[in-house]
Amino acid sequence: ALGFRNPFSMACDPISGSPAVADNGPGDGHDQVRIVAPGTNHGWPISSLRHEFSPPLFDAQSAHIAPTGIAVRREGSG
Image 1 (cartoon, rainbow, N blue to C red):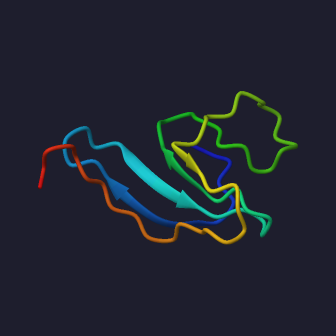
Image 2 (image 1 turned 180 degrees about the horizontal axis):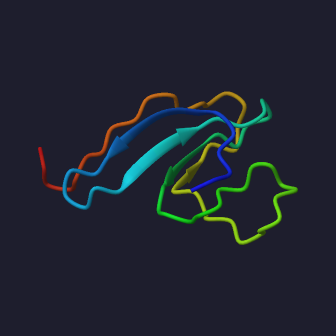
Image 3 (image 1 turned 60 degrees about the vertical axis):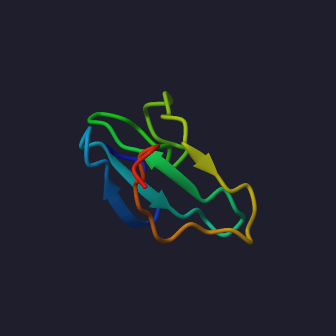
């Protein structure tokens, strides 16, 4: 995977093994949580040659919220 700007943390789903990453943007918000899969482009920088960006699971859309820690919790797991 490519296109991360400033990944702060990562956690893997204990069942699927898929990693989730908290990725912080350039300071104007849009800090994101993304599920990472091989070959995906997460959009940084915008001038990337491949423009098929993977959509985020969560986009803060605010400079006041910045996800920096992450944990994966399954529904019904406690």
